[in-house]
Amino acid sequence: MVDHSNAWEALMADGFFWWCEDHGVRAVMMDAKHTLSLQAEQIRSMVDMGIDALIAFPADPKALNPTLDYVHEHGIPVITTPFIADDPSVLMWVAVSFIEQGEMSANCIIDFLKEKYGEPKGVVLELRGLTGETAAEQRHSGFVEVMKNYPKVEILTYDTQWMTEKAADITMTVVPTRPDIDAVYCANLAIVDGFLAGMKAIAKDPEPYYVVGLDAGPDVLQAVREGTVDVCVEQVSPAWYAAIACEYLYAYLEKGKAALPNVGAVITADDLKITGKPRYGVDIWAYPTWSPATIVDTHDEIGTDNHILHFKPKNVLITKENVDNPAWWGNMKLPGW
Image (cartoon, rainbow, N blue to C red):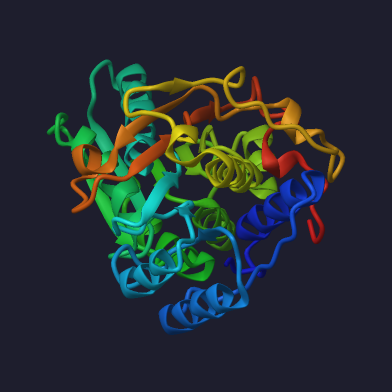
């Protein structure tokens, strides 16, 4: 249940179909376009069609609960990715820690400021995602919690609503009025594109700024190569998200709860071996960049009402030194890029 106009989500859909094709599993997917009412309607429709298991891409952490209860009443196991649904019927949530991504981004910038000034001080422009949206809030909170420890660092925060055009407009408005900006934190790939477009529009060279971007799309990776983005904080490929969810759902159908990992476990590529055909020029399954993953309880981790297993892959830092790794999804020969 993804938006096929979004390259990242489209690759998650591909990963789902790849895994099902490689393992002889019939698959159906519906695109709710992040519309809650349509998503609820589609899930009920799939349940009535007789599906055996469900991977959900929740548009909201709570709004789907009545629908997921309907799924549970029909004995259908559910795993969500990359966002969580805070419902007791959910077996597992597969996603990196978005909070950790914000923390990693902040720490990279602090290291840069220490090197530049000899101490952590300066001005940072934060181009954040949509206020109220799960990933945006967690990427923002992880970032500002680290920054709170450095009172000499001024943070200029603006909501881009995840929109490239909005990020460009903010950049064109703010940067000329604040020549003291040292670093920029862009909370996803669309925002990176917007920042760079805004800088180009005002004829400002982005290279003197220390720029941290999230999401290793093709444009972001090229910006890392060119030096206009210094580091990209990357989560696991969306194709891996789908494959991991499929692997555990299939095992659950065969073995029940015994197939699920326990809280506190560390899962490596030796524990969870996923194979399949190469696609888009890469045997992505040969690059388990998610490993190791830790298993935590979402109630203890982020304060959910329910105790849901969180399969938490590691985040990685991409720089000029490792930007050409074929494991990064933006290096795949993606349609339309």
